[in-house]
Image 1: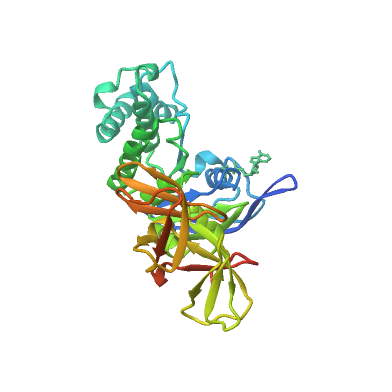
Image 2 (image 1 turned 90 degrees about the vertical axis):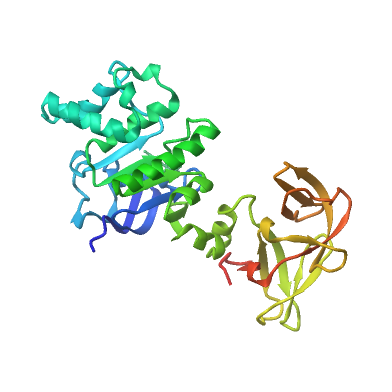
Length: 355
Ligand code: ADP
């Protein structure tokens, strides 16, 4: 099967600044792919390069098997959806929807029919004669999406489309966009800095940092087996705990450099004296009765939301423990904490790579 979108060794320079570094990415037809990473990592540059709004400096970009490097945006047959909606304020919803068809010479009646069909899919049927200012944020977002859908593009490109919306509407619109994607059998590329949004919406998540793809894969694969400390810390909320550690002289135990150093067994022997970083997710730590755990820690701060308890230890490094429901831990208490060996992540202290 031809990949819908394929990037091979793509680089992008802004002057001397290397914004995309040797990007290899294959996006299957029908996939929902999220590009995620901290601000400035190159997500928008990658999306804009797909759209043709930026010219790539080297490498190849293929859409539907055809090389697109030099093809202008309007001929790439992709539709971009922005957070700013970019609706025409002086046009009704219907006019906003039919405009792009009309400028391409589609007859009025035919354009109106197409608009009505799309509006029925996106739930805008009753709002066709309103102006953008008469719509809520979520409705405007739907108009923006409808305008993209009406063109039957090869793929939808979303650039942080929900960042203007309040928290509850965002959660609602995530589901709506994903459902629409499924219904249309679309191919979508979705940029967000919000890892929860990426994890919940996409089948394939691409984590970027400083112009490089650090890791890509199914959401839970990234969560379970992050390839390095960066991805481990970026995916998951609250973030993974990192504790510096050194392999003991016997090669079979590890000393964790906590406020009070503590020793845990290693399931596989490592070179004596090797410096590691232990990664443990807050939700994988369990408070157990005195002395029965692998670690003895002192409680610093306790926060309870009713749903969850966040127990943070005193001293450096701080360790966060996430417990469902309520906790009896109180600031100043010594607690015993355990975890399963499968949840122990080890990273090289030098390179940050997973071991
Ligand atoms: P993100 O979308 O991940 O926040 P961007 O793709 O917008 O990141 O930007 C990646 C990097 O490229 C940033 O350091 C940004 O400052 C730089 N950059 C983006 N656009 C330009 C431009 N037109 N000229 C120069 N530098 C740019």
